[in-house]
Image (cartoon, rainbow, N blue to C red):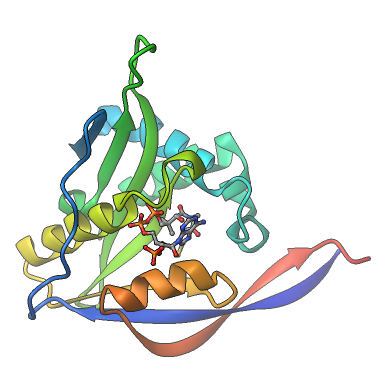
Length: 185
Ligand SMILES: CC(C)(COP(=O)(O)OP(=O)(O)OC[C@H]1O[C@@H](n2cnc3c(N)ncnc32)[C@H](O)[C@@H]1OP(=O)(O)O)[C@@H](O)C(=O)NCCC(=O)NCCS
């Protein structure tokens, strides 16, 4: 094993200005505010969204169900956790008895900023505006608790996500490097 450094952008959005538009929640989907009883659903949505993605190399816990549950519990018990910026999406297929968790975003308050943690939408449900909807709800939550800006970190190679954030008005504030252990050839 060896270490490699992943280049990431810190991206920021001013919340004092009008927020980007987001679509309404489409039929069949449920948008749920945070509740302790939903922690397992958030963890499942996180795992299903990230397990095959680039960020698993940077944060290996995202590629494991138990890792996602541990991470989710750790976020919820942090001092700066912002329940108002933490939202879950579920999808209720017509032929299924129960809705399944398919999207999540969590918010943390730190240094006067709202920090987005692990925005994720399962592959099958992407491109419908659900990521935009989750970000909009998180932004409203940060505003409701009096924060003037929100930020997130995204791996620079995650070009589709970077493009989405820029389209919504985020600007690249700086480059940060995250060390990760990787298998060497
Ligand atoms: C980034 C992500 C949350 C976007 O969710 P989404 O529901 O598809 O978002 P929206 O439908 O609101 O926006 C889709 C846009 O995002 C872009 N996008 C980003 N990643 C994408 C992906 N893997 N598949 C499809 N579209 C993606 C598309 O370019 C699209 O732009 P367009 O409308 O110009 O075509 C989702 O792709 C995802 O969970 N990715 C894996 C986890 C991840 O990398 N999260 C970000 C960590 S910073």
